[in-house]
Length: 69
Image 1: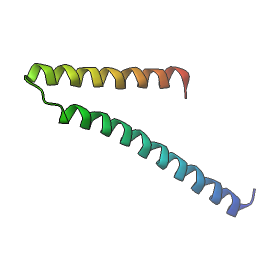
Image 2 (image 1 turned 120 degrees about the horizontal axis):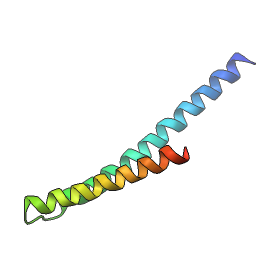
Image 3 (image 1 turned 90 degrees about the vertical axis):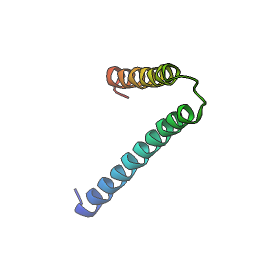
């Protein structure tokens, strides 16, 4: 296989992986910022919302791990 073509494909795949990772991080950061900016009356309310966010993240991770997508 042509080394230049191979290098080009590697770069393209790497750029796509970085882009996807950026999108995922931006999504979860936005979700966390929503929780942060809400006016929580108690620490228990904040902990509850953080638990819900963590549960969503765990569920998504398990879906990705089982489906391989």
